[in-house]
Amino acid sequence: MPQSLRGKCLVAANSLRDSNFRKTVVLMLDHNDQGATGLILNRPSSIRVAHALSGHFSLPDSEQVVYMGGPVEPSALLMIHDNEDLGESSSSPCSKVFIADSAQSFEQVLLSEGQEESNRSLFRIFSGYSGWSGGQLEGEIERGDWLIHQGCHELVFVTDPYEVYEVAMNLIFKSTSLLPYRIKDPSVN
Image (cartoon, rainbow, N blue to C red):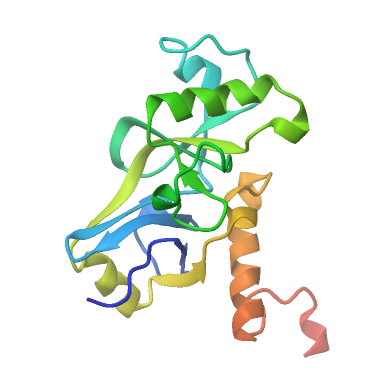
């Protein structure tokens, strides 16, 4: 098996035809011989976190929304956060990003929402996840459907989710010294 993609971000290439992943950035949570799982970082839904979790927690209404993590198990909720006190290094797909792997850490991150900004955790809650069977993702990468970039806190928690794809593409072009795919003024050619 090639090197694990855990902690990397898959950035959809223009050639990718699967509508589930058009112009997406996927943070890889796991990747091994049996398959791969990840979360789409730039598909916010219209469902507010407080509403989605109202049966479990009494949360104040906020602007936080649930993200569509992928087409697999859309009723399952997953959380990633940046609270190092609640994160285990084993649940960290990339630097300063953790998976809430217990009900206690999930709740504590949510409760930090009401604290002062300096004590507040950044987090995202996802409905469902993205999944690939063994060898499937490798085939898509070989076909050129995905560009790969190291996952990082700044990319995972970009304030405007609609900018994540552009930010990721710019990071890829910067790191590979390629020209940007959009030239603002073609007359300078």
